Length: 288
Image 1 (cartoon, rainbow, N blue to C red):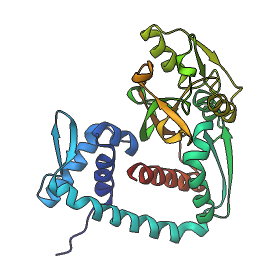
Image 2 (image 1 turned 60 degrees about the vertical axis):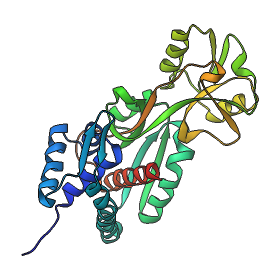
Image 3 (image 1 turned 180 degrees about the vertical axis):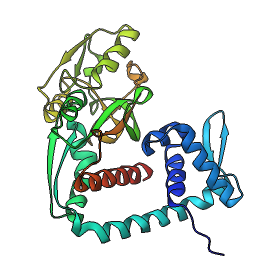
Image 4 (image 1 turned 120 degrees about the vertical axis):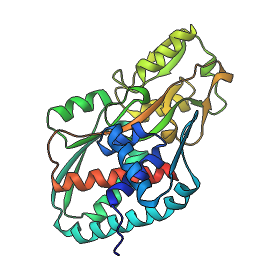
């Protein structure tokens, strides 16, 4: 009897395992939570075993799930490798991607390089702006997809990964001691600004904000010079700076999701290839 795995079920299994959440997996798979739960159940019925267990801390892999995980990655990795190799020559055209300033050099640059190597006939255009501004540009049709930073508890796009938002200051600096607290936010439209200022207000701290006209380099210079503190995602903090926390008298900040947004309708082949490339690249780096 021929026995074949449904790759769509395996992909959903990996998404749930990577996100440790049915809800986040549903967002990443563009499906309802109920549909994802049904797919997991079908895969469990296929193997006759339970793959996930639930407790107060959330969802986790069972021993059977842990056994399946590495082989499922290899299976889908080989499938995607074959797909990329067999279709790479057919992908041409242009893809326009929007990304916040802080993600360009940290998360996106390596992905853009490998995408260009895989699809040399595609012209890639980059539009940098704050997350709020990028959503407007995306809705206008000026870009094909956008990476957006939004609070993890209120995300609206496809969740790629969740990162802690952390206070950052100069190495052995003193800026965090000053009142009003000097806070550099890159731009007034920065997605982090509302939650950072709300956290300071709840704690009763006085602050003053410094805006650097959207230049991430200017904010980095301000922080390195100990003229201000800032808030960055954990994955984007440059080397040589200190992470600040409650022991420095600063309030805890919420986690943010890096989400993928695209216009309604079918993407172009170049945009579809970029969507796959970003999904796979960010999930792999999150696991590392």
